[in-house]
Length: 342
Ligand code: KG4
Ligand code: ZN
Image (tube, rainbow, N blue to C red):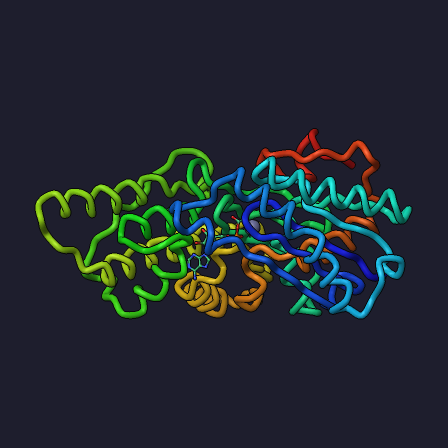
């Protein structure tokens, strides 16, 4: 079964054809990052306008790269939540138009569940149940992937996502948007021991995350230093920040895997491209005899191949939508929310 996936939740317009949820036939991503860079972050209305301009050629290219016509596609999967509402609406409306015109099934995909599915594209052996750790610009979540379409949240961020923390700290360090990758590069040169980062203490669920304290500490530290006319070694700062985020993600994920008895952990989301997070979690999994999966860096960020992959499993589970499908900005998982369209 060959599924056309469409993704437009933030600042990437993407389309892809994937066979049986596992094999990428094409994968086209039109990133707007260069344009948003001048504003220091994503401008929602600009993102929607660019999606409108790009979506047709991106979908056409995904079909031609896969050597297929629209009629040869078996179904159309689209990200309907969460994300910037005006951005999501472009992909949802376009996918609805294609489904209406062709009579093909329309499959709603939750963006976070889509990130987790990026691992299916490169790890043929990966099958639920496993423990997912999805770390992104908009969400940070540990979830039991009990079945392909049944997720149970174990812990999530109570405030900022890890990517938000990377990006805001990067901005204060003087790096352009999106800053995570620049912190990663600077961290390779820096000495993490040069700074002591605050440890976040939280009551309640030990698997929840909180990154706003860390973000505020770094931003205030840099602003105060600037006001005093002092220079800060941003390589060292980046290394310490990255180490702290990687440590937090790793410690909580390993503890959850042990408590819940999972022998497989799969990392995904934009921040899974971070070398500190990748290395720390893969080393900790190896130490604890846990099988570890992560996507290649090219499939960590937003793409439509992951949406088509998750779309395949949604379709097998009977999760399809009709023309009443709407975009939803909220962050809950499809399998855990009453707002789900299927
Ligand atoms: O999954 P994604 O592309 O979009 C959302 O769903 O949010 O994640 C984007 C996030 C941004 O915060 C970006 O800075 C971060 O992923 N990111 C990184 C790295 N590459 C991307 N953060 C740290 N290190 C990286 N190498
Ligand atoms: Zn994403």
